Image 1 (tube, rainbow, N blue to C red):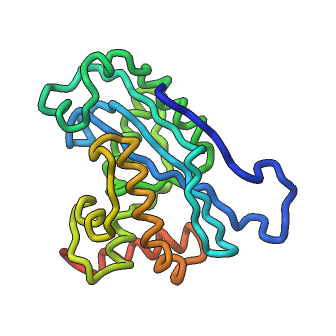
Image 2 (cartoon, rainbow, N blue to C red):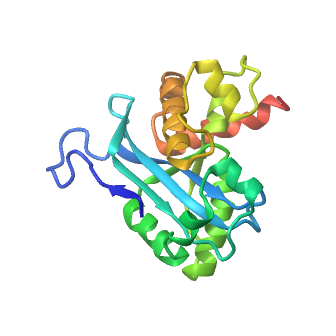
Amino acid sequence: MSWLRRWWPGAGAAAGPAAGTVERWLVLDVETTGLDPTRAHLLAIAAVALRVDWGTRRIALCPGDSLAVTVRPDQVSDKANILVHGIGVGHQRQGMEPAAALKAFLDWAGDGRLVAYHASFDRTLLDRCAARHLGRPLDREWLDIAHLCTVTHPEVKARALDDWLEHFGIECLARHEATADVMAESELLQRIWPRVARECDSWAATRRFASRHTWLGPR
């Protein structure tokens, strides 16, 4: 485990007038040995928390509440794959056992809401890995940042994450490196948040709002 930190302001504090309106969202990114989530091996998980206050409709990054783990795969990735994510053979072999890495992630995540860019990939891969190594899938609700980008900015003809980062002028320090990607994705969510907050007042409402991307047709 390269780093694991937890910070959540107000934890254990007495309930106030806005009790129940603050949620912990977890923006997550994974690195894998391939592009097929039904077959690829997990190499890394990175995530950072955001504090969503529905009372004020504000969202805030909590960089101290974050996680990053490197996972030891059953089979190390090939050279071409390593050139993409930068996790070398030695680093892979020194990673945590998959079961331990997944348990560390779940212990840190708690009941936080899971958010990702192209979330179906992360969800499929993590559910499969958890079923294999922990005996059950994660079975959690997810929110897709890509879908939120589409419904909040339908005028932008963007397809990939790089397109959205370029549109908003967001710099990613090292693309396809999980900890860097997750920070860029978190900033992207914050950039589109004003339009999300105008339409949504809860996690469920945000997921319904994101589902409207299907109405917009092919991009």
